[in-house]
Image (cartoon, rainbow, N blue to C red; front, side):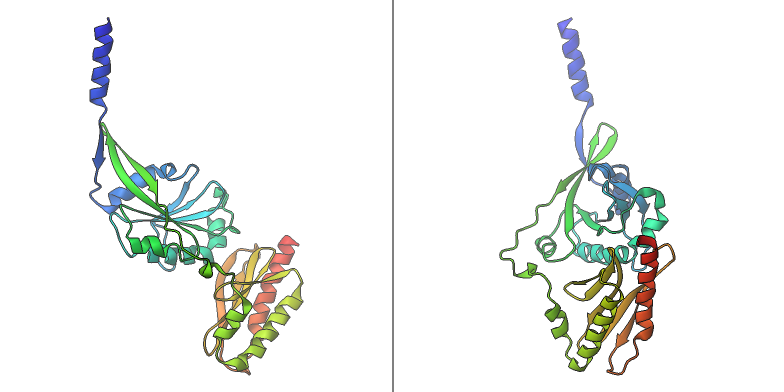
Length: 281
């Protein structure tokens, strides 16, 4: 009897073989990942494979268990373009997150949260690993390994620990003077100041916030406008909202002259505020 059980154990051990497998193409790798999304993170759900966006087609558009949109870009091998692609798709998703939440209404997307970027490849160069520490938003890197257990194929993901950046100079909070100083045409500063005052006079609850590239405005957490300086001009940017508060489009007016009429752009900001006030109080 003991020999019979030993023989069965040996038979089982012989049947189960763990082998490394190499996908024949990126499409095959995509197919494997699509079937194993929760191997990356529990609760990760696919919204759309190869979703067409204004600036390109990310491999996977997902939502995590906390309602955040997730862009996943995949490369079969090491590829220096992967970070640029991920950031470009992030920009699209960030701008259109309200519209995406409306498209996928039953997926519990929280459009107030910033999207995430996940990059997956067989390997990453030192340049990519270093550059991901210097950009905002945070970029998550995963190495993959496709394996076969008997006749079934699976995938294993390993997180990449990014190198630590010495010093905290690049993490200094953005300052208003940095945005203002970037504008060399100083005659336009009085227009910027006037626009700032007029926006904030609409309602004290409109939040003015500073990023590394623009002065932004939100009402109850939703973007309604911004001022972005160039060397000889600035863009007065704004969102155009539907009656349900979703973003129809983002638009802007470039102001390069002291006598430029920005009243129509200001009306667009006011209109977005009024829609949000009606919805959010």
